[in-house]
Length: 296
Image (cartoon, rainbow, N blue to C red; front, top):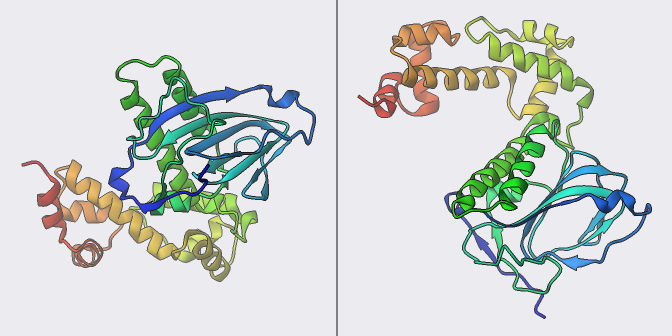
Protein backbone atom coordinates (compact mmCIF):
# COMPACT_ATOMS: atom_id res chain seq x y z
CA UNK A 1 0.00 0.00 0.00
CA UNK A 2 1.02 3.65 -0.44
CA UNK A 3 2.49 4.79 2.87
CA UNK A 4 3.00 8.41 1.84
CA UNK A 5 1.03 11.22 3.43
CA UNK A 6 -0.18 14.49 1.95
CA UNK A 7 0.82 17.67 3.80
CA UNK A 8 -1.31 20.78 3.71
CA UNK A 9 -1.75 23.94 5.77
CA UNK A 10 -4.85 24.30 7.92
CA UNK A 11 -6.07 27.54 9.43
CA UNK A 12 -6.73 27.34 13.16
CA UNK A 13 -10.36 28.27 12.58
CA UNK A 14 -10.81 25.13 10.45
CA UNK A 15 -9.64 22.74 13.17
CA UNK A 16 -12.81 20.79 13.94
CA UNK A 17 -11.74 17.48 15.53
CA UNK A 18 -14.01 14.46 15.26
CA UNK A 19 -13.29 11.51 17.53
CA UNK A 20 -13.18 8.23 15.63
CA UNK A 21 -11.80 6.04 18.42
CA UNK A 22 -11.61 6.29 22.19
CA UNK A 23 -10.47 3.49 24.44
CA UNK A 24 -8.69 2.66 27.69
CA UNK A 25 -5.82 0.16 27.56
CA UNK A 26 -5.50 -1.33 31.04
CA UNK A 27 -3.86 -4.67 30.24
CA UNK A 28 -0.46 -3.19 29.48
CA UNK A 29 0.96 -3.57 32.96
CA UNK A 30 0.43 -7.36 32.73
CA UNK A 31 3.10 -7.63 30.03
CA UNK A 32 6.73 -8.30 30.95
CA UNK A 33 9.19 -5.41 30.79
CA UNK A 34 10.47 -4.97 27.24
CA UNK A 35 7.60 -6.77 25.53
CA UNK A 36 6.97 -5.11 22.17
CA UNK A 37 3.57 -4.65 20.61
CA UNK A 38 3.23 -4.97 16.86
CA UNK A 39 4.81 -2.10 14.96
CA UNK A 40 2.20 -0.20 12.97
CA UNK A 41 1.57 2.88 10.87
CA UNK A 42 -0.34 5.85 12.26
CA UNK A 43 -3.19 6.64 9.85
CA UNK A 44 -4.88 9.45 11.76
CA UNK A 45 -4.06 11.83 14.58
CA UNK A 46 -3.67 10.04 17.90
CA UNK A 47 -3.35 11.17 21.51
CA UNK A 48 -2.47 8.96 24.45
CA UNK A 49 -2.57 9.85 28.12
CA UNK A 50 -0.28 7.53 30.05
CA UNK A 51 -2.04 6.24 33.18
CA UNK A 52 0.78 4.04 34.49
CA UNK A 53 4.10 3.09 32.99
CA UNK A 54 7.42 1.37 33.28
CA UNK A 55 7.72 1.22 29.52
CA UNK A 56 8.57 3.26 26.47
CA UNK A 57 7.43 3.92 22.94
CA UNK A 58 9.19 3.87 19.59
CA UNK A 59 8.00 6.49 17.14
CA UNK A 60 9.77 6.86 13.80
CA UNK A 61 12.75 4.83 15.08
CA UNK A 62 13.21 7.00 18.18
CA UNK A 63 12.68 5.57 21.66
CA UNK A 64 10.69 7.76 24.08
CA UNK A 65 10.60 6.86 27.75
CA UNK A 66 7.08 7.47 29.03
CA UNK A 67 5.79 7.97 32.56
CA UNK A 68 2.48 8.48 34.28
CA UNK A 69 0.84 11.73 33.19
CA UNK A 70 2.70 12.04 29.89
CA UNK A 71 0.79 12.94 26.72
CA UNK A 72 1.87 11.21 23.50
CA UNK A 73 0.94 12.94 20.23
CA UNK A 74 1.22 10.93 17.01
CA UNK A 75 0.59 12.16 13.49
CA UNK A 76 -0.39 10.51 10.19
CA UNK A 77 2.46 8.75 8.42
CA UNK A 78 4.47 7.92 11.52
CA UNK A 79 5.40 4.41 12.59
CA UNK A 80 4.90 3.46 16.21
CA UNK A 81 5.52 0.52 18.52
CA UNK A 82 4.61 0.26 22.18
CA UNK A 83 7.22 -1.24 24.52
CA UNK A 84 5.55 -2.58 27.63
CA UNK A 85 4.53 -2.20 30.35
CA UNK A 86 2.21 0.81 30.34
CA UNK A 87 -1.50 1.65 30.44
CA UNK A 88 -3.15 4.55 28.65
CA UNK A 89 -6.18 6.34 27.31
CA UNK A 90 -6.21 6.50 23.49
CA UNK A 91 -8.02 8.95 21.24
CA UNK A 92 -7.87 8.76 17.44
CA UNK A 93 -9.33 11.78 15.68
CA UNK A 94 -9.86 13.54 12.40
CA UNK A 95 -8.54 17.12 12.55
CA UNK A 96 -11.02 18.62 10.09
CA UNK A 97 -13.92 16.34 10.97
CA UNK A 98 -14.71 15.59 7.33
CA UNK A 99 -13.19 12.16 6.62
CA UNK A 100 -16.32 10.22 7.56
CA UNK A 101 -14.40 7.25 8.87
CA UNK A 102 -16.71 4.79 10.63
CA UNK A 103 -16.34 5.41 14.36
CA UNK A 104 -18.25 2.21 15.16
CA UNK A 105 -15.80 -0.03 13.32
CA UNK A 106 -12.58 1.97 13.31
CA UNK A 107 -9.46 -0.19 13.67
CA UNK A 108 -6.13 1.67 13.85
CA UNK A 109 -4.28 -1.58 13.05
CA UNK A 110 -6.09 -2.04 9.74
CA UNK A 111 -4.43 -0.64 6.58
CA UNK A 112 -6.42 2.38 5.42
CA UNK A 113 -6.15 5.81 3.84
CA UNK A 114 -3.83 8.21 5.62
CA UNK A 115 -5.32 11.43 6.90
CA UNK A 116 -3.57 14.54 5.65
CA UNK A 117 -0.63 15.77 7.70
CA UNK A 118 -1.82 19.25 8.56
CA UNK A 119 0.60 22.11 9.13
CA UNK A 120 -0.55 24.57 11.78
CA UNK A 121 1.34 26.49 14.48
CA UNK A 122 -0.67 24.85 17.26
CA UNK A 123 -0.24 21.31 15.96
CA UNK A 124 3.42 21.84 15.14
CA UNK A 125 4.15 23.23 18.61
CA UNK A 126 3.05 20.07 20.45
CA UNK A 127 5.96 17.63 20.86
CA UNK A 128 5.71 13.87 20.43
CA UNK A 129 5.82 13.45 24.22
CA UNK A 130 4.75 16.21 26.61
CA UNK A 131 5.17 16.01 30.38
CA UNK A 132 2.73 18.57 31.82
CA UNK A 133 3.13 19.85 35.35
CA UNK A 134 -0.31 18.49 36.22
CA UNK A 135 -2.20 15.81 34.30
CA UNK A 136 -5.46 16.29 36.20
CA UNK A 137 -7.18 18.35 33.51
CA UNK A 138 -6.14 15.83 30.86
CA UNK A 139 -7.37 12.88 32.92
CA UNK A 140 -10.73 14.60 33.28
CA UNK A 141 -10.99 15.43 29.57
CA UNK A 142 -9.78 12.04 28.30
CA UNK A 143 -12.26 10.36 30.62
CA UNK A 144 -15.09 12.63 29.42
CA UNK A 145 -14.22 11.75 25.82
CA UNK A 146 -14.29 8.04 26.61
CA UNK A 147 -17.61 8.21 28.48
CA UNK A 148 -19.30 10.19 25.72
CA UNK A 149 -17.81 8.04 22.97
CA UNK A 150 -19.12 4.77 24.42
CA UNK A 151 -22.54 6.35 25.01
CA UNK A 152 -22.85 8.21 21.72
CA UNK A 153 -26.04 9.94 20.65
CA UNK A 154 -26.97 12.10 17.67
CA UNK A 155 -25.42 15.14 19.38
CA UNK A 156 -22.26 13.51 20.76
CA UNK A 157 -19.98 14.74 17.98
CA UNK A 158 -20.63 18.32 19.10
CA UNK A 159 -19.71 17.59 22.72
CA UNK A 160 -16.70 15.45 21.76
CA UNK A 161 -15.45 18.25 19.51
CA UNK A 162 -15.58 20.67 22.44
CA UNK A 163 -13.55 18.27 24.60
CA UNK A 164 -10.95 17.78 21.86
CA UNK A 165 -10.58 21.51 21.31
CA UNK A 166 -9.97 21.91 25.04
CA UNK A 167 -7.32 19.19 24.97
CA UNK A 168 -5.53 20.81 22.02
CA UNK A 169 -5.77 24.21 23.70
CA UNK A 170 -4.28 22.93 26.96
CA UNK A 171 -1.51 21.11 25.09
CA UNK A 172 -0.51 24.28 23.29
CA UNK A 173 -0.67 26.36 26.44
CA UNK A 174 1.34 23.81 28.43
CA UNK A 175 4.01 23.74 25.74
CA UNK A 176 4.34 27.49 26.22
CA UNK A 177 4.26 27.29 30.01
CA UNK A 178 7.76 27.79 31.39
CA UNK A 179 7.43 24.91 33.85
CA UNK A 180 6.82 22.32 31.15
CA UNK A 181 9.67 23.32 28.83
CA UNK A 182 12.08 20.43 28.73
CA UNK A 183 14.84 22.80 27.62
CA UNK A 184 14.39 25.12 30.59
CA UNK A 185 17.83 25.36 32.20
CA UNK A 186 16.71 26.74 35.57
CA UNK A 187 14.30 24.04 36.73
CA UNK A 188 15.57 24.39 40.31
CA UNK A 189 13.84 27.80 40.39
CA UNK A 190 10.42 26.62 39.16
CA UNK A 191 8.73 26.92 42.56
CA UNK A 192 10.24 30.33 43.21
CA UNK A 193 9.09 31.63 39.84
CA UNK A 194 5.64 30.17 40.43
CA UNK A 195 5.42 32.19 43.67
CA UNK A 196 6.50 35.32 41.81
CA UNK A 197 3.85 34.80 39.12
CA UNK A 198 1.19 34.27 41.79
CA UNK A 199 2.31 37.45 43.58
CA UNK A 200 2.15 39.47 40.36
CA UNK A 201 -1.35 38.23 39.53
CA UNK A 202 -2.63 39.01 43.02
CA UNK A 203 -1.03 42.44 43.42
CA UNK A 204 -1.21 44.17 40.05
CA UNK A 205 -2.55 47.36 41.61
CA UNK A 206 0.63 47.63 43.70
CA UNK A 207 4.04 48.87 42.66
CA UNK A 208 5.93 45.78 41.52
CA UNK A 209 9.66 46.33 41.43
CA UNK A 210 12.40 44.03 40.25
CA UNK A 211 13.98 44.21 43.69
CA UNK A 212 10.80 43.14 45.49
CA UNK A 213 10.10 40.29 43.08
CA UNK A 214 13.67 39.01 43.28
CA UNK A 215 13.34 38.80 47.08
CA UNK A 216 10.28 36.54 46.67
CA UNK A 217 12.34 34.29 44.41
CA UNK A 218 15.28 34.49 46.85
CA UNK A 219 17.59 35.56 44.03
CA UNK A 220 19.64 38.63 43.31
CA UNK A 221 17.83 41.13 41.02
CA UNK A 222 20.17 40.47 38.09
CA UNK A 223 19.98 36.69 38.37
CA UNK A 224 16.21 36.81 38.87
CA UNK A 225 15.86 38.90 35.70
CA UNK A 226 17.95 36.37 33.79
CA UNK A 227 16.02 33.35 35.09
CA UNK A 228 12.60 34.94 34.54
CA UNK A 229 13.39 36.12 31.03
CA UNK A 230 14.87 32.76 30.03
CA UNK A 231 11.79 30.89 31.23
CA UNK A 232 9.01 33.23 30.13
CA UNK A 233 10.53 34.60 26.96
CA UNK A 234 9.93 38.17 28.16
CA UNK A 235 11.36 40.29 30.98
CA UNK A 236 9.57 40.67 34.34
CA UNK A 237 8.53 44.24 33.48
CA UNK A 238 7.18 43.17 30.09
CA UNK A 239 5.24 40.34 31.75
CA UNK A 240 3.75 42.70 34.35
CA UNK A 241 2.73 45.16 31.64
CA UNK A 242 1.14 42.36 29.62
CA UNK A 243 -0.92 41.15 32.58
CA UNK A 244 -1.94 44.70 33.56
CA UNK A 245 -3.18 45.33 30.03
CA UNK A 246 -5.13 42.06 30.03
CA UNK A 247 -6.81 43.05 33.30
CA UNK A 248 -7.53 46.57 32.03
CA UNK A 249 -9.20 45.17 28.89
CA UNK A 250 -11.52 43.06 31.03
CA UNK A 251 -12.42 46.00 33.27
CA UNK A 252 -13.06 48.24 30.26
CA UNK A 253 -15.52 45.73 28.83
CA UNK A 254 -17.07 44.23 31.98
CA UNK A 255 -17.42 47.28 34.25
CA UNK A 256 -18.52 50.90 34.21
CA UNK A 257 -15.39 52.03 36.03
CA UNK A 258 -13.82 55.21 34.70
CA UNK A 259 -10.58 54.95 32.75
CA UNK A 260 -8.82 56.66 35.67
CA UNK A 261 -10.13 54.05 38.13
CA UNK A 262 -9.12 51.22 35.81
CA UNK A 263 -5.63 52.66 35.35
CA UNK A 264 -5.05 52.82 39.09
CA UNK A 265 -6.56 49.39 39.83
CA UNK A 266 -4.24 47.84 37.25
CA UNK A 267 -1.13 49.44 38.69
CA UNK A 268 -0.52 52.24 36.18
CA UNK A 269 0.85 55.37 37.85
CA UNK A 270 -1.33 57.86 35.95
CA UNK A 271 -3.86 58.11 33.14
CA UNK A 272 -1.51 59.55 30.46
CA UNK A 273 0.97 56.70 30.96
CA UNK A 274 -1.82 54.10 30.92
CA UNK A 275 -3.25 55.56 27.73
CA UNK A 276 0.20 55.69 26.11
CA UNK A 277 1.02 52.05 26.91
CA UNK A 278 -2.47 50.85 25.98
CA UNK A 279 -2.42 52.61 22.60
CA UNK A 280 1.11 51.40 21.87
CA UNK A 281 0.29 47.74 22.58
CA UNK A 282 -3.38 47.48 21.57
CA UNK A 283 -3.37 50.10 18.78
CA UNK A 284 -6.53 51.63 20.27
CA UNK A 285 -7.06 54.11 23.08
CA UNK A 286 -8.81 52.71 26.18
CA UNK A 287 -11.95 54.61 25.19
CA UNK A 288 -11.87 53.26 21.64
CA UNK A 289 -11.36 49.71 22.96
CA UNK A 290 -14.34 50.03 25.33
CA UNK A 291 -16.55 51.34 22.54
CA UNK A 292 -15.50 48.55 20.18
CA UNK A 293 -16.17 45.65 22.56
CA UNK A 294 -19.06 46.90 24.69
CA UNK A 295 -22.65 46.28 23.69
CA UNK A 296 -24.26 49.69 23.96
